[in-house]
Length: 322
Length: 278
Image (cartoon, rainbow over all chains, first blue to last red; front, side):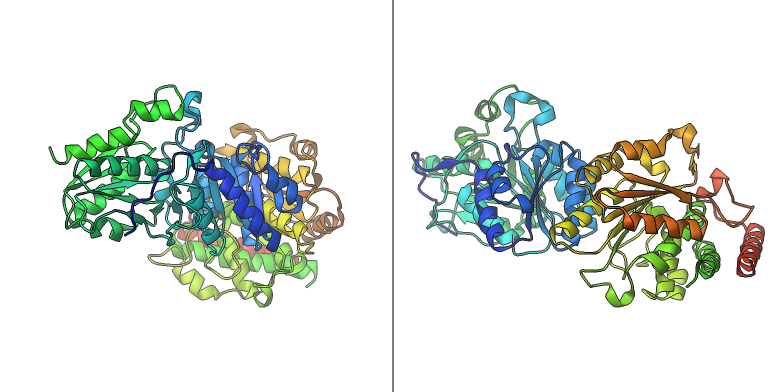
């Protein structure tokens, strides 16, 4: 358990995709087997600097997501460490079978990077939203699913992934996100959730991933002022899901609130509900995008509409005590 | 081995493949028979793959994209010594078997899992690109069915292989003209197939895919082709080897009756003897 971090409102604000590019460039300089692939997406992925600096380790496949994933698998089978970048909406649906068979089933070391995830392309419609990717990829045996929250955690995650030989899917958003952690203070253990709380005996738990972690922390701080001490579980590792981190909080919490930039089925909320119901039945409130096309707007406008913000989370936690 | 000896071997392996299918009560016999000569020519003459070098980064790579021809593929792998034929035959597709009904790469000699069509060519492109990056000398081979060519991912791959001028890549089309519903040209036409691949930047070689001399020449030509990938359109006969099955679409995955089995075995033995004494 770590203390709730101080949120610096004038801190760094860069997209997590930028952190991925920076981390991979540092790795590629020392390891020629680190390879990046894009599907006409290098700009959106913030990977243009990588492509310019390491042209021999960069592959453009054109607008062909199925090939993006299969070619990555072939590269991996021959000793390369491919990072395949494509908008999460396309990567998680158009090339789903390639991820299932050529990556997970064939057990190849392919890292799938879903950029502009969730409702990053807020106003562009459902074609450009990836609100199903957690459910889809989590259902594939041997596939791991990660949604890091800020640049520091993203960098640590990518550095960890560079050292293993298994496939994984990483979803990051398009927008700059304010830091949660710092270079000096970013607790990270691979495949273990980061649990943040100012007390040993929290009254409630908020489980979040990706861009929802920051509003979860804001909500926890607001709740503390009114006497409710909530733990925030940064479940960046959606799969393998850290069940232990959830259950450890059960003895003192009244219930759980989950918050995710995802459809209401098969995502973080479903996983937490499943774990809690099986081991320590308590109330679980799921905050998620609706089972419907989301309203047109920026990410923030979409989040605000559906209560995926600090106030929405705060109210959901308070409802546990009503 | 001489091409004549390889022809005889292909018929012997056809018989062993039919035995596997009879034992399992399942299999894709028609495509197994059409593609057998291609597999034998590749594994016993043209590819640098053996149990001894299966972990060598310099080995050639092979991906069976038409994964439903797994029975002939596994028979060839067992003949190469990757695993025991009897174990394969006695457990194929049975409860708990590691010999699943489509290629599975936990088995020695199998690079990639397949079964869903349209994956082998793009995966092979990745392998070929890795070879180019490493300036390695290995070649990459993939065998597709002709019905499989309706998958869009094949043409994404065809585009990429041409774009990257992957002359270390050789694709094979088992052009037997039939798929499960009937003639490939009735289901979804592929002609002019040679021109289609050529338009994507490929060197196209057409051959008799059930004739070892013709296949030998085709793969030799592919190896000598520089600056573009090669595709061998191997004209074959579905169910090749027995009049019971030849050119009959229902034999895509039909399991012979006892009577049909006897006739098929007799036909295969007769053809084998004819080739041996030709």
